[in-house]
Image 1 (cartoon, rainbow over the protein chains, first blue to last red):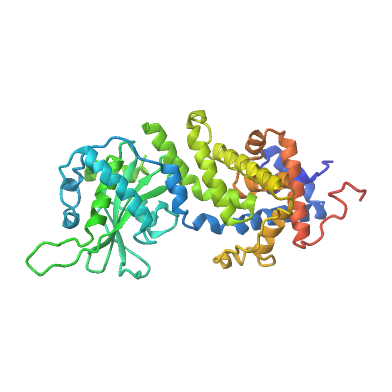
Image 2 (image 1 turned 45 degrees about the vertical axis):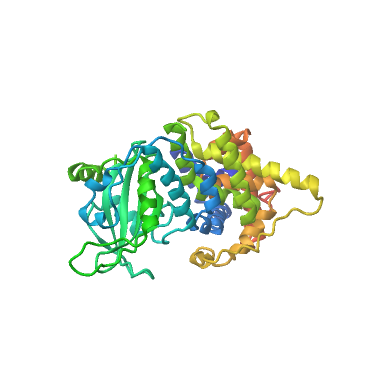
Length: 259
Length: 180
């Protein structure tokens, strides 16, 4: 006859036993109502302990903590020519910047700070992207150029998300530039998220309000949020974005879950 | 900064939500938890070379958060000799109602307060194993105690918590080993 200690019942409730131990305790529990109620109590305390602190995970992390961890980004950088390979529509707010790498890096550092102080939107909030959100879905499962409708329109007038380009950063992480669009397919917010290969979590590295205004007809678009646009370009430079992946390569990565 | 170091920094950023939760479980107040996480991150960055690639970054960071918290409490104790029970109820989460169904009978603030009243060594195993999901063995390795000790602390913590939250009485005397 197995003597059921609290520790054994807890390990049983926590699913921490080997199959043989589990079966042995399950058999002993059949004739022991008190032990069963203790197992239920252990399950309940696990559930309420997790629930008591669950909200912290979905809160935005304070900027000062992110700043502390990222410190100064001092890696060298290449000049971005991603613009040429991005989907054409995004050229409305971006021009090629044939500047020296060091100049871009300075912009990038300023950009990283600027972006963190002024989060463009909760929709593309900095830091890890919570799972089961529209943003996570678009980043993980949608090819570039495929808009996905949001459940409701946000206060910024945004009602869909679309990835505009996929690239690898200098650490070979997969990164994707994503835009939040209004019903006329104009980008209001743009952001860059990179996928942490270990956890599979997408992390928004920066986002910017684009607010491109439709110009008088017959002319090209004019970006109005000039410094935010530069900020995003600076971020791409810091990440070491050089070229967008061709559609076939993106398709293959999508199919293999970005492996 | 090497590419590997930048990579670790990004992984730590991804861990920040869990580090904050762990610190909050230990400390009981958000402000204190964030201060602890911040100085823990500063410490970790100062000794990144001590992190062994291939081992778990989360365990390593939890360990640093834990020692940072303990140092902090020690310093506070030296400075002021009054009761250090953190004000657990002040920061009731605004979106606590999401979990209403799960915790029908126990208000989240009450749960947090009761967890805050547990002895430190019981609260930290509850934080590591039950809240953060470490295995008994991983927690034992981190704390440098036998797995049996970890299990005994955790089971006592949870039985105490259940009693404090007025759980239905289960097997009278069982926990104390009295005759049935």
